Length: 288
Image (cartoon, rainbow, N blue to C red; front, side, top):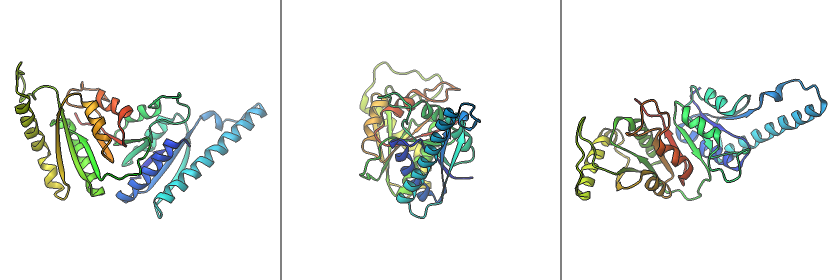
């Protein structure tokens, strides 16, 4: 089922995720599937009647929150094709299983059951880390539409999936695409290339811009109607990308960047942005 999967637990942030997912489903012409996971013990036959009462209360609550999520989706996107399912099992495992043939997963930043003040729930982190499709994390939706998608690029092949996703999103939204490249030292031009100890930051920035423009040339040809602006910054990627996210409708990053270790499922930048991005964050699995 090529659909958009969104997890809900009844929290405000999960309803924001449902709202975002409903709009995205309309943009992509895909059905929306809302998933709620419940503990497996709720489906066991209780011995103690008191446990049975608690079980029935929790099961009824699950049904109610799914109905509320469906109503939220239909209110935001009338005519949307939407269904809702309750599945027993560990939440992250259930979502990953249901999303095996989906287009993307959408989640709230954290839900019920997380500690007060915790910015990111463990379920969200597990799903983002192990998903093989783009995962979008939504906290609070801003009412203002900025008509801009931002993407972090590092001019290496591992960022290609994130760039492709960002161009597609910008085209669907008829929005501008801001390609953000953050550098801390001159880029290596090949294996064994020695980094200079002294360099002119302006010259380096111009070279970084050239490399980024070159890496996006194919995608600009594929999406000629998408306006692209380049932002080349020197500094710390998390701080700069988090700042950019305050002006965007969506921030897109790869699950790991050029400096990531082979086999590392989630890079430090994408991990940190899950906590600090000001807009919905799409983490796209990298290749290689």
